[in-house]
Image (tube, rainbow, N blue to C red; front, side):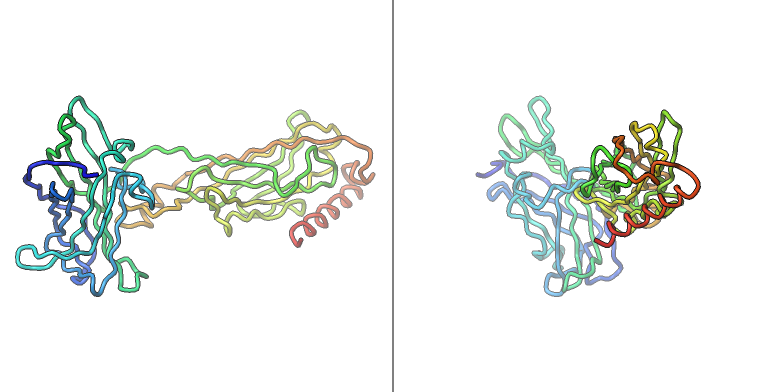
Length: 351
């Protein structure tokens, strides 16, 4: 289905962000966008760009207008079809890269790229164009173009287009809440008996971030004021009753987890009520910041102090089936509890 049937219009010429010192990978210094109503084709021409498809690999990605949120692999779901980047076109006497694409009105109307007003609408989106080495192993250059297409809803005609500069070195301010889901895992029994191994798994709430570090974790029984350190200092077992967390090596994102294990000391079972575990973890960005001129410095500023809370509760069972040494805190009996904890952890970690 053709999107628009409209008369030709004057396209705007606006600078877009670019990077890359080598002419062979050049995407020019400005962008020209046109629309051909007879074929429903939008064309982005990278004016004075020297990159050619013969020796470089071209790529593109559609984003929301912020140029930060990718629209996904199935771009047709978001209203973009027949996209191709790398076609060269003669512009001002020289060949330069070009990208063509079409927009499906029926599909894009269902997305938040389609902003409706009274009798008009705007289609707002961003396109990121990349040029890499011929084997695709190194991205050398890219441009990000924020595009607005005006539509007359009474006629479904395209009334205007504009492409705005996306400053590659700009820093944006945004608010995002990241949380950590903390669960007992790896067949941790509930309720817990003396000598049982507790394994705690942690998973972030978003693919934007990974859990890079577990900075602290403490087991606490509130009614008795009994505490047991599990992680202290960061990413290190506080004593022989816990294993070191795996967050620094696993670096989990959503759908993945890192973990550590503990055995609670005998004191907790004297009055077997709920034991709470609490700590803090550090996030790092999982995705590359598209607008960062210097990624390392920009990420350091964005991630400064970005911590998430880690909380879990463990129910205890009071039975007389556990070894007598574990039922007494202090002296030689406590030494036996330590030895048992080490053995249990070793068995779990080596299994």
